[in-house]
Amino acid sequence: MAHPEFDAIVIGAGSVGNPTAYFLAREGVRTLVLDEMPSSGQGQNKAAIGGVRATHSDPAKIRLGQQSLEVFAQWKGATGTDIGWKKGGYCFPAFDEHVEATLQKLLPIQKSHRLNIDWHDAEGIRRVVSGITPVGLRGGTYSPDDGQVSPLKAAESFTQEAVRLHAQYRYREPVTSLVTEDHAVAGVRTEQGEYRAPCVIIAAGTHATRLCQMAGLDLPVLPESHEAGISAPVQEFLGPLVVDLRPGPEGKTTNFYFGQDSDGQIIFCYTPKEKFPGENRTSTFEFMPVVAARLVNLIPRLKNLTIRRVWRGLYPMTPDGNPIVGKAPNVSGLLLGIGMCGQGFMLGPGVGMNLASLAIRGQPAIEPGIFDLLSPARDLYGGKKESLK
Ligand SMILES: Cc1cc2nc3c(=O)[nH]c(=O)nc-3n(C[C@H](O)[C@H](O)[C@H](O)COP(=O)(O)OP(=O)(O)OC[C@H]3O[C@@H](n4cnc5c(N)ncnc54)[C@H](O)[C@@H]3O)c2cc1C
Image (cartoon, rainbow, N blue to C red; front, side, top):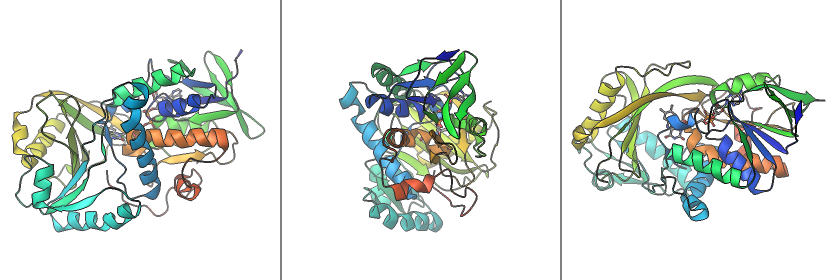
C-alpha cells in the first residue's frame, strides 16, 4: 500500500538527518523521517562527545563547520531550548617540534577562511587550559569561537523543532529498498509499506553503503570503533576542548581529546593506534586505564575525577577521510549526507542546511566550488590526505 505523498524523505534520524529534516520543514517541505531505531539520535549521534569546531584544514569542512557553529550558537535564542552550547573554544597544545610544525602550517589556510585561531606561547596556553602541565609545553593553537554541544539534547531539540514545523517521524521502520523510476528516485519501501516522494536523502550513518547499494551506487562507508567516557560533574575550570596530538607513550593511542561540558562533566575520547574496523560496540578493559594516564599526565588535577560511564561507538569512515555530501550520480532526486567519519555531529547542521538547499533550489547554500569537494562523484581513493581529529 502506498502511503500519502511527501516532498522529501530523510533516511536516518541522526546527526545529519535531524538537522536536514529541520531545514526542509522550515521551508515548508512536507518531510518524512524514517529510522530503524526507537527514537532520534540512537545511532552514532549519541556516541559523540559533542566537540564542534570550524577550525579544520579542508575548505568544505571549514565552511560547513562555520554554518554548524552559527546554528548551534544561536539555537537557544531561536528556539528557547538549551542544547548545552558552550563557547569554550578548541585548544591544540604542542609538546614537540612535529606537532608545532603541523599546527603552524595549518594556520595560514585557517586564517584565509577568516577563522578566529592563533598561535599562543606556552604561557598563553597555560592561561587557556587551566592546570596543563608546563613540562615540555611549547605553545599551541586556540580558537575561542569553537565549542561544545550535548549531542543528546541537540538530537531531541532538532527533532522537536522539525515536528513543530510539521515534519513526520516514523521510528522502528528500517528502509528496505528504494523506489526508482526512469533513473529518478520516487520513494522508499519499508515493511509497513511504500512512501512516495521525488526527493530522498540518505543520512543512514554506518549503514549508508547498504542504502546506496539499493540505488546501484557503490560508496564505501566503513564503521570503525572508538571509545569514550564521561565523569561526574566538577566545578567549572576548563574552557576549551583540548586535543593532544602526541602519540601516547603506552603505544596504544595516536591522540586524545577531552573537554568539560556545560554540566561540568569531563568528556573524553582517544584515537586508537590500531584501528578497530567493524561494528563491535563492547567497551574494552584497556580504555579507561590508558585514557586516565593520558588525562592525568596532561592535567595532573584530573586525578581526582570520578568516572561515571564509558561507551563505544562507530565512526562512519570513508577512504579519504572526508564526508560524502551532494547529489547521487546517475539517480536524480537522490541526495547523500553520509561518511561523516569522526565529525558528523559538528558538521550535521551545515550538511543539513546544504542538503535542504539542494533539495529545494538545486544549489548548495555554500559556494558550489567548495561544496563539490565533498561530491559523491569524486575519486574517494585518490589524494589521501590527513585531517586533524
Ligand atoms: C566515541 C565517539 C566520539 C565522537 N565525538 C564526536 C565529536 O566530538 N564531534 C563530532 O562531530 N563527531 C563525533 N563523533 C562522530 C559522530 O558521532 C558521527 O560522525 C555522527 O554521529 C554520524 O552522523 P550520521 O547522521 O551520519 O549517523 P547517525 O547519527 O548514526 O545517524 C544515522 C541514522 O540512520 C539510521 N538508519 C540506518 N540505516 C537505516 C535504515 N535502513 N532505515 C532507517 N534508518 C536507518 C540509524 O538508526 C541512525 O539513527 C564521535 C563518534 C564516536 C564513536
